[in-house]
Length: 579
Image (cartoon, rainbow, N blue to C red):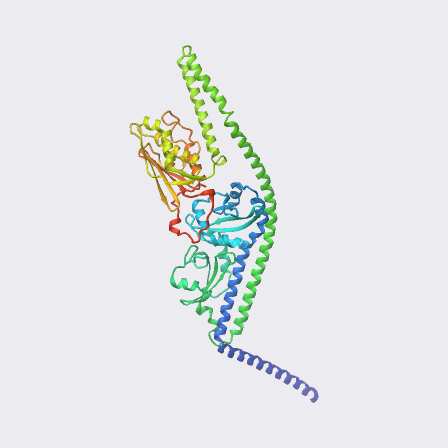
């Protein structure tokens, strides 16, 4: 090797070494400066950690919001289904699916259509969800309220606007918190964080809707003073844990992230060589989480578009079937009109001619022939009563009158006057307590009282004078009306069956005549008035029927309350609810 080449090679190696050393020194210097800055700015580093936690909460809240905002894509569908002048209840019933109920309100918050499950308790819960309606009226694409009392688990009211030529209506769906918790918990568990972190979705009353903490499951309410103080601030430390919360737009809900302080701030508590790598890893994790969430949002949008196309096809099929159902209902109405006259006319002639034969041909008729004529006349009479009862049952809704104040005391006095002959014949003792005035259909309420009192007289025990008691109690805005007797009673296992059409616990005899429609008619009248009816009985000890009716219900209007109802006072008695 020549001296020149050796010197050149040595110079290159020296230059490389110098560059390497210089670079190393620069890197070490930068790391030293960075470490020194970290030591002097622990407070700022801690703020950075808090900021990242808040970013995660904001991003997760945005994802949850996007799930509900997809409901705005159904606005054209809702306008077609709920945009007519009159909307049948069956439309809301088809949309109910797994939710508790569906109800359509007009701009003045009157009920236009409702599904099964929309009970008086649901009305009070909707009134307590005033914030939900205000959000939609303020221009939000949807409104989510607090958990309100409904059954055992409560219900969440989800409202979306339906813009029609009659004004902007509100479509409210009530669903139990459990319908959301399983899905949202999976999303909450994907939020990155330190070991021991917990994520909550809570409503405005600090009730948990979804949680990753088994100790505080869905339905848990944060009531402890320390918890209340922590949730009253956007973020902060309490009892060794750090809290950060983000409100969800269009709702009273908040997303709360909680983590142990030691684990959360472990990477910024001292001078450590791996602090920069931990920061890079945190940024990578946040970026990956953002990418995953963004990709999931894009995928959700594509799936929503596909679902929208499928819904359009389904809606066309539903519209065709709805037209067929409307035509079928028109035919049934025509049949009811025919039945009110044409079907009864032959029965009247049969009864007239059998009675004339019995009188005019009495001497020529044998005992067997007279028995046949009497049976024919009795069968025609039963058929005529059955047609009349069926017409009354079918016309509860079709020929209903507007609600007006009804004095139950005067109404019951009129019923007893009509039944005075039966009361005197059976030597019955009827006690009527003070009865209030309610809003309702006077003709239908009179039919309800007459059926209950006449049943108490009819189903009497042999040799025991009937004793009937009619009382009422007013609880808040509800009237609890009771009709109790000392008759034959019934087995408790039939408490629900007796309200079915054509159900009879006794044979068709002269002692207990009837068609089996009376109690079914009573239940239908009670439900039309936003109430319900239930029966209690013991064989040989009598029966007791309890009718629950709203005290004030003009035009079935929902009046928004300024404050939420107390849960204990709004809970209905246990038992089935028919709507």
